[in-house]
Length: 254
Image 1 (cartoon, one colour):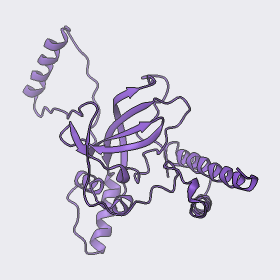
Image 2 (spheres, rainbow, N blue to C red; image 1 turned 90 degrees about the vertical axis):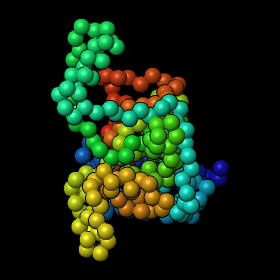
Image 3 (cartoon, rainbow, N blue to C red; image 1 turned 30 degrees about the horizontal axis):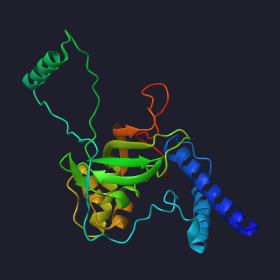
Image 4 (cartoon, helix red, strand yellow; image 1 turned 180 degrees about the horizontal axis):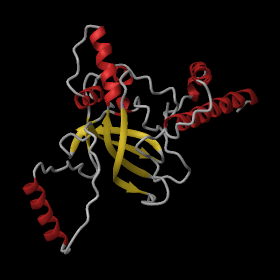
């Protein structure tokens, strides 16, 4: 590679690394180091260089979050492992029946439960190959879902590349794409001002936003992903305690 070409390639990579670092500081640690204006300057420089030298474009570049031309239809994706849905108990007798089944199936004399709020959104799976975001899909019927890779790439809390050097060969990260209540209220206010139909609730707004054939619409919606589990995992065993896993409920990208 000629000296000048290598200099440009090095600058592009440096910009990507710097922007990803600022995204992590901003979205995960809530400790931004630069102003929005400085961030925009770095982003604009990277975008300009990638337009001048398209051969330097990479799938994990921060510029690849703006959406793509509309699709005619979603493709289907078969999950490596079934994406099971949660059961529910809405009364004390139903919970006691659930508890009885747990004791019978586990053979234990007693069990302890951990309780946490359920975030209601759209269940999705994000597949990383060698740390790179390679596929996104909805849960669908649990066996087959819809491919929404382009749409999920616009969700800024989903990293395009996992942090760290030692990442699994393949990891299927599962979670919910949601819309926070405050963001939902603002979205509806903006739609009301524009004379557009209002969304019924945050869950419908989130699900409808992910299932857009035009990913640019998804990119304009205030979505976030909360990761809570994995499907197929190969190449490396992720720690369950002590060390953060490769993707968290609020992982990178401004």
